[in-house]
Image (tube, rainbow, N blue to C red):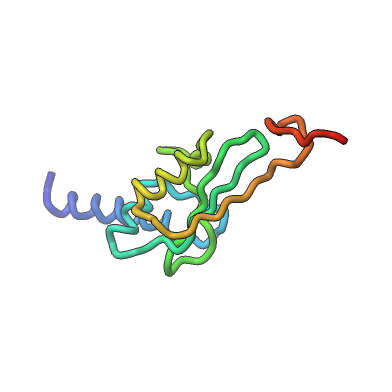
Length: 124
């Protein structure tokens, strides 16, 4: 493959990857490889938030330095959220894969007394 074609292809790939990071839509998904790409180029994670769905699955939300909004971590080759059944695994991924050792906020969509609650509140 000629050098010019290779350079154009690399530029197209870099532009596609960069688009994942530059977007300001707070619900915009971002893939782990794009986060790593951002970090390798001097970026940093400002904040991590883990949210628990009503079904007990945890999603990872990231705030990136120099970028507005939150980005939901997506699955490989998909815009669907990357979810974890165990909050400890989600935390370990943030620390091991992204080198993030700052505060992590936990929030939940579960409601007390719901049928999804594995530890129901005893009634009086």
